[in-house]
Image 1 (tube, chains in turn cyan, brown, purple, orange):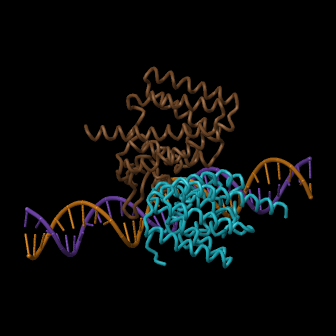
Image 2 (cartoon, rainbow over the protein chains, first blue to last red):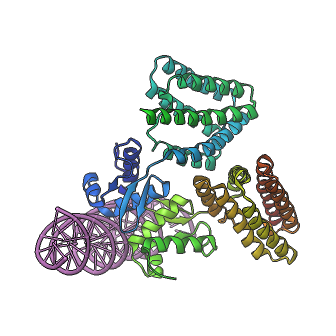
Length: 218
Length: 218
DNA sequence: TCCTTCTATCTTGTATACAAAATAACGCAT
DNA sequence: ATGCGTTATTTTGTATACAAGATAGAAGGA
């Protein structure tokens, strides 16, 4: 890893990774001095990094109190997923309008991988490729602002420790939804692509709720 | 105004106001030392403020180069307005589901003002009340994340020097759209409310493009 | 005259120092 | 012991100092 960018930027990226990787407890207070010492930098760039993460919603700064890792309640998921559904739906719509044969080839290849990882029950790789797939779609759509907003929300959602795909049967459903999406893309059927993507996201929310309910019971 | 919060926070608010109030030229470089001196603070809190504004998209930080006031091209508006249309449409949808009689009374009162200011050709007041109206609707919808995202985008849009409502005739159209929205809210017709709001936003984009074309010609 | 290159100056990025607020610790009274 | 008030300590917020990169300007050559 090359140390070219500013310490602030590096700190942002590292802390983001740590926060999203659950290296901190949700709600945990981040001690500036300790963190700075840990990262081997001074408090000045660290504080700038924390302000950025705060603007991203990954931490909350309470004046004179310190910085706390954000936590997402189930209620937040209820609010965020419908928004994501709209935004990602729109991506699918725009992507379907612009998709070229070579793009379809690339997406098909990704989808292929998805099927493979699903068959192998490799949830982590599935997640990874799934991310790349959605990212490729966003690039196709070519709407920078849409991309930006979705990126922000996606980061936020990763704060939630719940992984809906771990739920029984959900991975198969997810795969089926992806297949339907691919079919719509091949037909350049933007309306259907949008609808399928929307439902894909909303189904994730439903799965998450089901999972939370089960955890509650246990 | 009381100076209770941190200098960083104050700087954020002041600079935001200045940027949105077109006190800086779009693309203008912000000299840290000069700005800090102007605000009567040191560079430390100022830099934190700039990082926050950068995360909001109001400025762009180029490493080792400085901080520049963001500028919105017409292309950006083309991308942002459809997103806003979806988000505000969703607000209208959720608001229509939750609206209570007393809320309708309040919205009616605001709409009444809107009609009055339109009749008086008072563009600034119309703008102001229009903002309050949309805000009231957001509160009704009660989706904090939706509110947050719309707030961010709305700020961004204000970077654009274009103000569509100033276009002759557009105000009448805008008013008509508002009337249709109120009617849908009274009927608690969420789908229609969403559709009307979407079209309201998209019509604004069309008006902006018309205005830009006219400016181009002049 | 124009381009290049070296130098001087300016600006950003980072560390450190210090003040004020918040937290923790202690002693005291009940 | 428990609750309260005072003091000590930690921690945030801000200013300042300094180093390294970027910019501008001058000098020299084509």
